[in-house]
Image (cartoon, rainbow over all chains, first blue to last red; front, side):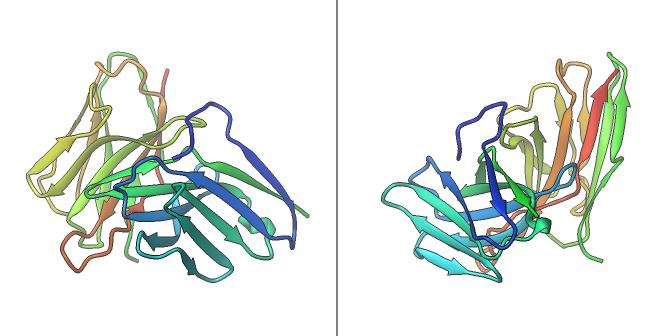
Length: 110
Length: 115
């Protein structure tokens, strides 16, 4: 996942624009990846997942792209809304273990 | 409603005390997990359990203990041996088995503060 640090990277976007949040994962053996949304003081919510045999998966307003060559994952949010403001983090799964990134804070400006 | 329920939401502990965080799920999931979240950091695994009456240490198990007497319950005790327990604690669960997905679902979390 992302490098651990005390300060989360922040992405500020205008309402209605598209957002792209990136994640670099570390374990080549990971075969399943998940994006979560976490609002302040709440538990993470599942957004979308992708298996390692795919390179793209679409949901409602969200798309996940997987590049195994460079071990990179991205989450695209279309037509970003104020309710999308939260911390987003990726998770990678290798057998029974999950590894989580520290996250990116998405700030949507009205 | 199906889900994972954590309680209490907020808990204050005096130094030297043990406290127990409750986690109950009605999703019929076999696997349950406890994670710790500190500001600006990724989730760190404390303990996990794949089946009733069995559990394994995660990456930061020192100062914590768990039990798994029932499928739906996985309480976490933060003991006085945990030197820096102030954090946000997240319980999670997942189905297991060959036809199960890998998605792990989370509860709403419990805030523990040492006073």
